Image (cartoon, rainbow, N blue to C red; front, side):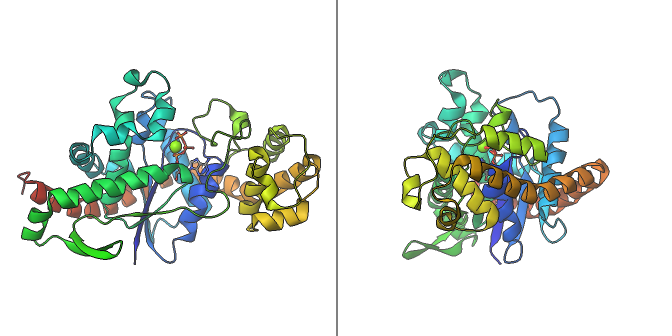
Length: 351
Ligand code: ATP
Ligand code: MG
């Protein structure tokens, strides 16, 4: 079975974008793949060092994973810092990757803002740790939102450079595996991991600004629908969502220059399992005063059971901690296998 890895940062409340772009896909991959789903707590201190309740936030994301339907017995659910091999491999990757590669990352540019010299070194190196998260399991597939596409490309660049720079030592130790690279087959240690980005909501936009993605760390709570929002909050946020004054277009092409309308139609499509064209078939020509309440009702229907289940699971932090401990132990065994080989390839003396 191909191996899937993905992570979510404990930086705040999970929102509809995280659900449609990530969690819903995590759940869908469980039958066909072995999956490792991680609460990436080390990533969460890159943009903001001090958090009020990082441990509580880590448990809350874990509860959301479980409430969405991830099975922690068949698969692995844990928090990143429990498996120190992630940070260890990230250090090696910091020496593989080039500063120029990191400087080009749009997430770094967005999060660092104007004062780039003052951003943490961790924020710059974020993609290197992310590559380590994935490659310490030699995962082949990563379900993510569209915003992470560039980081997945960088992960492949790091794997390629490692495989090339150490090719002789990988071969000498018999640690290479045959892998397809475009048309040809190469012998490398790390696979070239593929992102899984598809569906109508790979990039859910802020409800306040159709040009910015919905984010946990956006200061405006009105910009996102949280998985924990109640029916009233969801209805209010959708009602207040920014739109243009025109009714919905009568065909999908009419959404092209209308980012807010396109976003809401995309959300409706993803939540209902319909195509955008089918949504336009139902609502084309209608006013937002008609479409928005229908969207709110659909969102409440989908999210209310998840949020109720999250509350039920969160009431027992001991259970959540047990899931993370067990997952961490199983992940640690796999990660150590990879690191033993990496240490041997690089020439780091150990047992
Ligand atoms: P932060 O603002 O702290 O970066 P975030 O909302 O971007 O938080 P992450 O933990 O960075 O959330 O990302 C978790 C997963 O959710 C990733 O796979 C990411 O691609 C996906 N994701 C995040 N935002 C969106 C969005 N607006 N639409 C679709 N997928 C998203
Ligand atoms: Mg993010």
